[in-house]
Length: 465
Image (cartoon, rainbow, N blue to C red; front, side):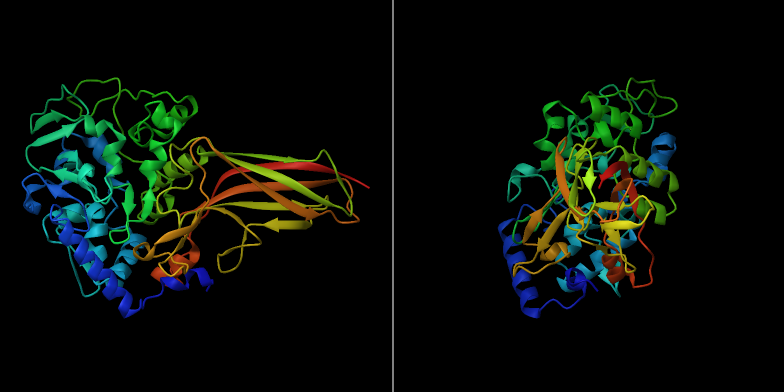
């Protein structure tokens, strides 16, 4: 196996576990305001909730039929049952003696954490059924505020929200009425800060930011133009692409319930991102296709070279990748495992390959001096790691900011007998995880991770003799 992925194998040194846990206990003692540490979730009452305080999404579907269907196949709906997440979470549970239980569960199975009913036994996580629904309707719509101002680093993240389950459901419409529950307008639900509570992750011991999607947005041209996360990720993909192109919010007219008023804008609940892998695994094909559409609209390629090249001489092409459609970096989230890369092939007039970079070998590893846009994570001793609980720094973070570009140069030798024209084919490819990571977590013969081509470009390069 590639050396970079060896660290995913179990067996963290016992002394490292003891140090980490002692630090975690110390940090928890210093943060009595966070009873579910290292999750920063809190309850309005200051006491654990009962899981029965939350209603099943099936209840919500009685009125919000379309919205429920959108959510049902989403990554939010799959947050707890995602098989790749589950495998990594289980490994973290074993290697940290439970440190990652509430850290990950605070977002992926929040009700289990908030009710103190999330447990790990016989190699499996156990939680009430409502917790296994992941990020569901009643959880989100009973969040009252973000408690980020009280967090150790004064930033949102690690589930920094306050919940008040009950009859009052909070949302973006000030005039909402329901025959079933009380309603309240929530400005927070229209703000990126709402999303930041979970889409920002920092290590509870060393405070290193492992995931900072919110920060990437916060300092972007999208934020400066008032474009919130919801304006892209809670919109049909085509309208999200138009929002990105124009930096102007689009409208999505409709009804949130059949008996409700027709509104200028209804937020959809597919929460489409780039993860087509898990949605496909779980059989949610429409959501997987929406994710592929989102990836297709995220980036553009341009390829430049000299007007001609000379046989027997060195030549080069320049590839520019531009983030045109994402309000955060490309890729984002756990950037140490995301893989967005250039597959470059140059062939002679007869179709014979004379140069290749970024191809996949039989094991599924990206080879031939690949240009990969992601982050390279290191543990406290400077060793490569893909375990979030071990990450202490990044060796580099080579992701592309919103509306930003990355430029890569590729050099090759033109064959001495080349005639006619060379053909350069460039593909921007995406995979949610390295194949070696999937193999380590789920077994060598689990499945082959799919790869999606985000953008493609071909040019012809005349050859002079």
